[in-house]
Image 1 (cartoon, rainbow, N blue to C red):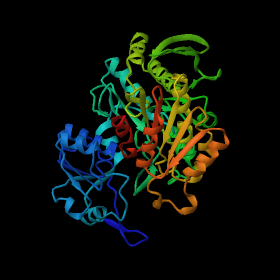
Image 2: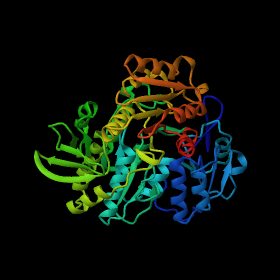
Image 3: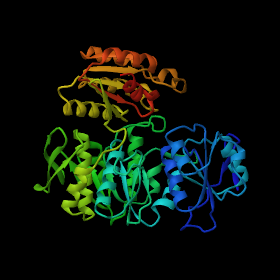
Image 4: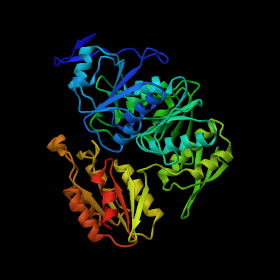
Length: 486
């Protein structure tokens, strides 16, 4: 059945979540299949023996190549003809709007459908114990590290991660072990479900890294964001565990509502798990950890920066809860290879090193710039930033960005793309940021497009420079173009 929405377009009648693996399901179609999570889900479904098809408006690498390698047919563009009569279930990505022609046809046909997070719960998590990694920052690195710890411990975890962990070279795995690791995204689920994705993941073990205002396109303010995380904490059963960043003031105010066991971690003295000290070397960061005020562990990790070491500590605390032996934990932390697009060195040409990072929120930008400068103190740090996310293209963070680049030596800012989608009065200004950075005594330049920016870099960088390129998009392949030109 379908109902009529207030704008006259048919709205879908959501089916109840499915129980078990329904044998009658054969053909599953994914709308918005080229999103990172949706493509991974398509791969999981294919591995489970379903016939899988997909559709998307933008079919391009790397997801198009992944889907092609999995032999999953993809329709380019959305339309009624993509929904063949034999389809048993449709999974609707959150890029799909109510007015999408394929969504309208889905309503007309009355086919069963699920949102992406509902499908993850049904087909991936199932009856496994769910480990949900949540928070504004650090989800991908923390999820990847925990998956690697469990893999090293022989626990064969399932996981789905928003980046590519270098230890696995894939961002999804079904796994035969008892645990499933999933990034708990606070973004909305679908046009018919505006609640956050993490509410569908049956959290038993949950890590909460941070709570800050983000996703200005769907959240009104910080209180609105906090409300979503309160719902997540309320879902954790009494027998569950919450591992919470005790250095985050907002988290500390909220965790008292939890009915499960709570352990805090961080640098502050009041945390259950505390970093006593850390020492950087060329290859590793040595970390000493106190638990309950007593020396618990010393470990080495190739990760660096306070934010990454904090993420490591959350994984250490969870590993303790799950009974991972100390020697296994130490091995996993030392052999962790990181995540693609997270402080990933892509290459060095003519003495110029190019690093890629996904940072886009002002806090993530600040922490990343500080961490890279601390790791490479004798190099000139050239910071290249593209504001691309829905929040960073808005002026809500305009002033905060001015305080995010202090550790850099030269800042190169691109004017945000796709600004026609942002109301004029709400638009971020790269020119204003450059002016604000100049007032702080920092060298900064802005460019209207990537070609002009690349030309500047080629004339301005020199041997010994570290070029840190930050964007949550492809940045017009700037990274590889710079290396090739050098």
